[in-house]
Length: 246
Image (cartoon, rainbow, N blue to C red; front, side, top):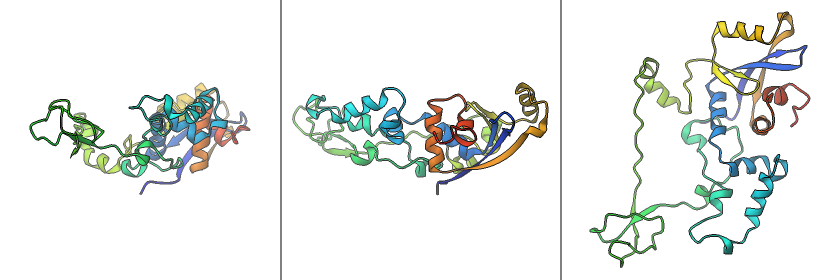
């Protein structure tokens, strides 16, 4: 079952009132990667049109209000307003963002071919379409789409943990801890780079640096998504600074 809450360990500069970076597990990194797969129409719906910065909210509303009379007959507004998104349960991703209906949920589209077994050159989404080969029969014989299996990578880390990774699901492997910067730059953690980071932040007194563990649920996830579109200090804005209620 997909997690509905994940933990994140923040390294905080108390004096500077900022998050330096976070130490994250696979679940939080999978959530961040999933943000990159979200269509714009889904982002607008998650953040509400009124809460959007810029003009995307207005564009979304204008598409909503546009009569179907002005749409091409083979186009469906729901593909823009309710685009298909990855299923969190099916991919074992954290269920941190609200579930919203997609066009796949509201109107399932299958595939079909001509009922004449001799016509095998074409498939269609519309079972009422006329076969372009025989130009007589309808394309109403249902067919199934076979997904291509992904080939395993040949590097040592991948080959040694292929079966474990497949059972984990998500985007990244859970064998390491990841560092997520305030601007969401991410990389696997190493001790040497952590020390170098403190020097880069000009931290002279380690006493001003504290660890803070936070829980990320649905509310925090939506605020993080919104902050990622507005700010270069996402973690500070959401979890520590005065903008935490963004």
